[in-house]
Amino acid sequence: MGRALGSPSAWLILVLCFADLFVNYAVRLGYGVILPAMIGDLGLGRAGAGTIYNAYLFVYIGVAPFAGWFTDRIGARRVITAGLLVLGTGVLLLARAGSLAAASVAFGLAGLGAAGLWVPVITLVQRWFAPRRRGLALGLLSTGYGLGFAASGVLFPPLVELSSWRAAWTLLGAAAWILVLPNGVLLRSDPAACGRTPWGERPGAPAGPPGPAEARVPLAAVFRMPVFWRIGASYALLSFGLYGLTTFLVDFAAGRPGVSLERAGLLATVHGLFQVVGVLLLLPASDRLGRRDTILASNLAVALVIGRFAAGSPSWAELCALTALFAACYGATFPIYGACAGDYFPRGAMGTVAGLWTPFYGTGAILTHWVTGVLRDETGSYGLAFGLGAACALAASLLMLGVPRRGGRPVAPPGKGEPTR
Image 1 (cartoon, rainbow, N blue to C red):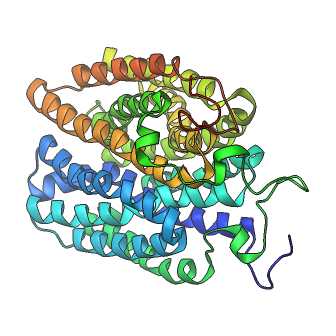
Image 2 (tube, rainbow, N blue to C red; image 1 turned 135 degrees about the vertical axis):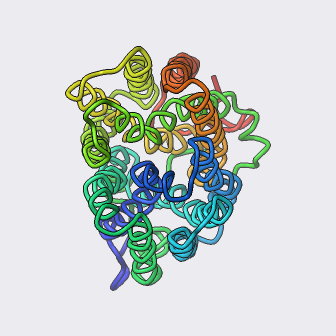
């Protein structure tokens, strides 16, 4: 297939999507870094702090399935550009919030914008890279959110100290607005539409996987596939464990003797940097080992780490080491679950399926913010809450045992082609 003059390359698409995730996840994960300062200034308890984050997540999980549907129908470029504009607006409003209610509304608007980023971005990248290169591409892409979190751990504590938590949100809101123009001008939603083929595709290979790959799959057919529910349930349980620790990690560490907020914020940097290590190692490895087995091993490691946090008060060195291992698995989690949409479902349904899994993930995250916040307020420690998170991560691992080993060839709907197992 010939190449259209002036059309973008897969690598330009990847760079733009990297920048989008960098800002998006600096907002989402940077909340935990800025949180201790917001608690004091706005007079919040941990349950109230969880409520602000849950406002973001409620909107996010309610809209994300539609974002996937729109991505498959009107294109990722439009969805991503609109998402950045709304995200920036919500974050700038959060910087001016003076109450729990105002902060919740503003962060909820940010969640609306964020819903237009993750699913469209991973769908877009999977379309621009051949199936045998998706793990590599998603690994490189996903360094964006790890580095975004790492940057928040370095920049935000001193910025809060020198100015205020409001300055940190203002900086992030402006960054999201700046990305609107290059995304709107340069992104392309499908390589075929601009005369290109996915990067890494062998000469003469078809544009998509064989069989049902190009057909649109009715939602009812997706819902009848057991693999959809198994992966979704695993995603929900793991999300409970991941977000319970990540959101309250800095607050947990800042409560240790001799650990200041600025020093505790360094754990966010460790977290972010080792997310990069995780995606660069685990996602390419999943191209060879298979998504299921990689997810299974990663989820078990997450359960062990959270269980250790629940068991007692680790030293500062152990805190850093545990955070590094946890982060390596955390970083790979979202893109590798997202890659399952390309491996187990037809090409024309990738965005829709990834979007439909978002409520599973969001439900786990919402519940853990309330449960963890309430248990911390009531018991005075995070032990019980983290213990529950470890149990959920373990259950997420066990659920993946029911998912077939399969890679690179999507499952056909029941009654069409190969049956699901």
